[in-house]
Each structure stands twice: as C-alpha cells, then as structure tokens.
Image 1: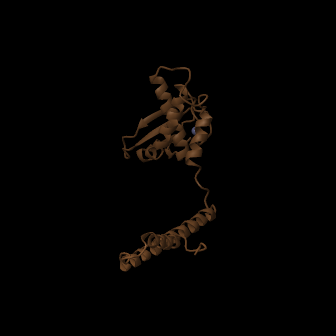
Image 2: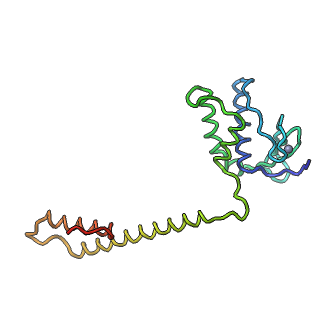
Length: 198
Ligand SMILES: [Zn+2]
C-alpha cells in the first residue's frame, strides 16, 4: 500500500463526489437505510467500507485527502479537480433527488449506475497515441463551412456597396419591379450555385 496520495481520474472523482454528497444529504435527512454503497477503490478495485476525508494543511492548502478503508489507498483532490466535475455532480444529484421525491425517474440509482453515468459524462481518458482522424475530419468540415459563410457575407456586402452607389430608383420606375430585382440579386448573392430562374 502506498502512502503517497495520487490524483483521482475525473470520472472516478465525479462518481465519488456524487456518492459522498448523496450520502451526506441522506444523513442530513436522517434516512439511514437507503445509503448508496461506495464505489470500489479505483486503484485496487477493493470494496471500500469507509472513507476518511481530511484537509491537507501542509504544503498544498487547496487540496484534501481521501483515504479508502480498508485498503488505505490515499487520493489527493484539489479544489480545481472539484470545480471541473461539480456541474455534472449537481445535475446527477438533482436527478437522484428527483427520484427520491417522486418527481421523475422510476427508481433510485445504484452505485454502479452512478459510476456509469459519470463515465458517460466525462469519458475515459483517451489512450495514448489514439487516432485523431475523426477530429481532423470535423476540423476540415468546420473550416469549409466557415469559409463558405465568409464568402456569403462578402458577396452580400459587395451587393450592398453596389446598391448604395446606385442610389434610389429613378423617378417613374415601378417600385415593385425595382424591389423584385433587388430581391433576386440578394437571393443570388446568398445562393450563387442555384439555377437562376429568369
Ligand atoms: Zn485501494
């Protein structure tokens, strides 16, 4: 058993925060029977029967220690770590409380379901050397969309400049025809590839 504290992966931290906070809420509500069991220790996978939590007042003031018993693995959790997961933790806790209060959901979540949900929300860390091909494709598509949006905007502003230069319709022009022409020009500027019905 190592005594040096290790960080908790975010998905584990989220599951642990939800379970610990849920149990604390139930204790405050004096519900003694429905307490969720703890998730297994992330390092050794052993059943955790109790957790000792303590603030570290030594070097890093903004971190706390979680000591799992009986395996005695120690984890360091910083305030930054907690901030990263607390939005998800709040969402999950409200969903769980909604079940308890009969507002939604069918039955209480199990600890395994809390862990699954945490993993679904945060995901496992990407394995080293994983293929970023999908991401690269998304970047290509997005930059193409961006370019096309930019050229749409520049065609429309060119049209605008032309209209400003052209000034108001000359006297005696049919206003509705004048408008129709402008609308067609505008339509063509936005959809340049479409067939032009003339
Ligand atoms: Zn352990």
